[in-house]
Image (cartoon, rainbow, N blue to C red; front, side, top):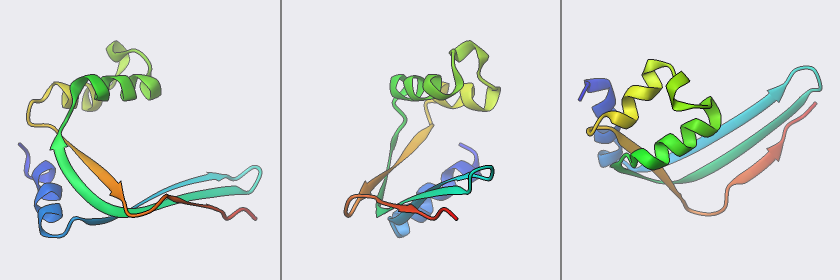
Length: 96
């Protein structure tokens, strides 16, 4: 496994506390939405079937995926980082 792939696992083993932020910004309308979740990270083996299902929803048929996406689900060393939330995510409307 490449060092840059192993590093998050080592860091999370030392301190599994994480914060996950997803922002959406529409410059045309000024709508800005932010979802924040704090919790504990778990590193687990990548479930290939789940990864393919999720990526297909975003990238369409597997045959059309860029190599950087198609290589990971096939790699037995691939891992998934899962956030176990402390409380429900917080949704904020930061629109202007």
